Amino acid sequence: MSLSDITGCLNESFAEIAIEVENFEEKGSNWVLRRISSLDLYTVGYTPLAASSFKFLPKYIELKRAIVNIKNTDNFCFLWSILASTNPVKKNAERISNYVRFIHTLNVNGLTFPMTLDQISKFTAQNSISVNVFTCNENERVCPIYRTSKRLQKHVNLFYWNGHYSCIKYFDRLLGDQNGHKAKGYFCDICLFPMYDEQRLEHHRKKCGNISLAALEMPTDEEKCLKFKNIHKMIRKPVVVYADFEAILKPIPGCQRNPGQSSTDKYQEHEPCSVGMVVSRSCCSDPEFGDMFIHNGFDPATVFLEKLIKLTDEHAATSDRYPLSMSD
Image (cartoon, rainbow, N blue to C red):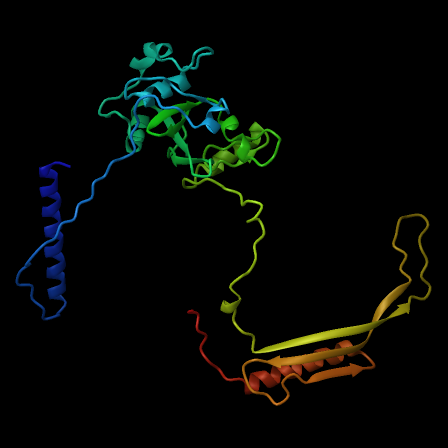
């Protein structure tokens, strides 16, 4: 940022402060701003991601043989990688000499090199070539760092590592070990989710293009089981009922199997004969706390339901109403 740019930003800030002060005084606060005694300005140096000359790829990436790593000695690895994708060759794809004759086809007016991520959208607008950029995280997994807002007919996927762009020639091979299955996967270059045929992948891309930049990462074997741990944050239930039924096996009279079709041989059924329950009240000091109710005899299910209804009515009539606190 030049000195004139800084001066312009300061003038805009002063104008905004003056407007805020005027609005504040008009609200009848009776406060008056006489002067601004001091102003502290803090600046932070910013170095955007930029590309440079040839760099070796990580060994685990190189062994996949999915990337064309252009051996350039200049700062135009971004352009060489674009040309390697749009003009593929079968032999010695890493040599610049294969793409020099195509360099004039790219419009680089107004762009500075080494190429930074914030200039890629301008490159796309000038050349009608959409670009996605990927890298690897600390877990050696491929993840996106730049995604085009709209996929065009000419589309390029690049790999960024250690200040150097490379051309991703086989995207599915690059992400093959992130699949979790031995079957070949066709990976979406937006969310990195695998499909198992190209038709499904094209259908998926139409919907996936509407979401923000993301990479789906499945849990590891140690993380795949979710467990509720914050038991102390649970809301205590004012009344808890513990109940248990006992039943006898009653023969089914006149039960006969149909020899003409497969069926289950039903010859007995469960008939409830008793019920037991314990009521626990955690919100009040009830003298019958923990008392057990047992019923042996006719229709224990109906007796149990009638007892629950009675307990509900008693609790509604005697319980204290208090606001629910949702904070820790």
